[in-house]
Length: 184
Image (cartoon, one colour):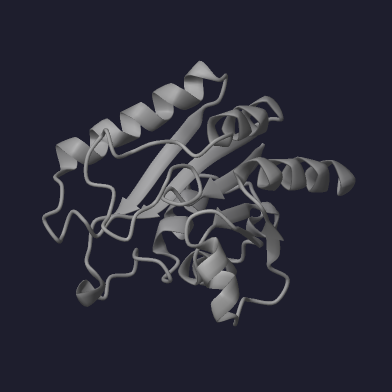
């Protein structure tokens, strides 16, 4: 079994500094659903790990978040993809929880559901430094996409060593599939 962990906002869907607050605002990035389908067809389980402090801030409620996630999974399925699990942190940064990235809690919870998989072979795809830092702490190789906050993240510098940088989720899927085949 093979596993990939994806961040949501900025990787799968358009992001906003004002938060994605409604189902209508949740719009997939070009090619992201096809990339999820490509990974699925290549034998990967796809899990999503996302900070959603908009819940704690009162910008949207759990019903709306669940509707966004249903939209995401449905669109992926229409393309032949499958999202196995969605983990989210509902806390604000002031809560100092263990699940909010850059803490590794979301990734560690997902990995605990796959005890036979070596975390060192589980790519994490994100668009922010906190995604990459959480991946490193959880023992997973990080991939940074240029979409979402990716370009800002690159410009700030300080990326973890060995971070792979790609244009978008499609390029990440291509890299992951190639890398998986070249190491077997």
